[in-house]
Image (cartoon, rainbow, N blue to C red; front, side, top):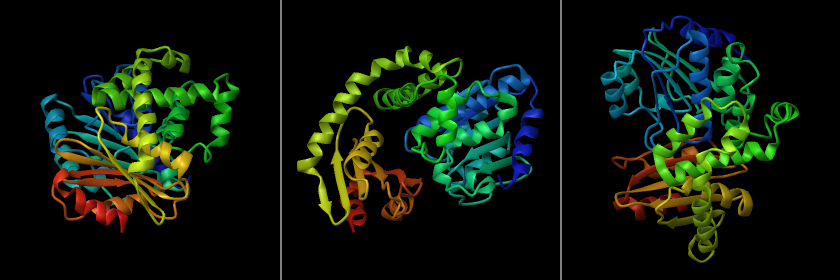
Length: 350
């Protein structure tokens, strides 16, 4: 680790929490977001002997803090906020608005866009504490490392689920093996991660929050596998398999680009792009566009990281109103109004 002083700042943030404080945890909607949020919430409870007052995830694709979220937190009287796995430095204005009534701790592994550090805000980015490629140091592992003294080894399996969710298992082989040595099977960890994705796909933010609520008190991975989250699996898997078959005759194949656009009642773009990229096109740029009534969601993947998907998505939607995009070199996402579909497709392919 390059900078343990930042870890100490996070510990100071916890040490200043009082039972009368109104504490919120805001997290991303994927497995890394859920697991890092759960670990942060557990650290708060372990330290002040009281649960967080509010946990929340924004709509899928909203990778920074929105004005609506600031309003919700203000109305709930929140004065302490922990944010995990969100690239909030892409829109500094909303963090400054949040600072007017709350102290903030940000734990994230997206490439730094702006240093948001202030008297009110502590931000810890993976690149600030390690030489590991940021996309390979998930927010879950970073949160676990920061609060290890408070959390101990018991929730290591939760950190492993988050690592698997962000496809950083090869980087953290030793850590995952240590979790397996404690009696946890790798297959169970992968299945637990998948259940978060299924809940997200089938029930949106409600499903993500349900996953958070189930992971938060869970003592072991078997609790997750036997939970109500499993009800989402069958329908979502059927839909994914359908589109894997459909893409062959409907996708655009040009040079090393595979672009597939589709519609579905399930939010499967991320899971579908992961499958296509990992199983069929590991050395190509896989672009999945899921069309809704008013907007199109992008999920971009490139396993060999020869091109940055985050840069690609940002470039493709640059200048388009009501659009947002970002992520990492191997994986990124975003959205834009559907009326700009053809324009964005041309830019993505070219």
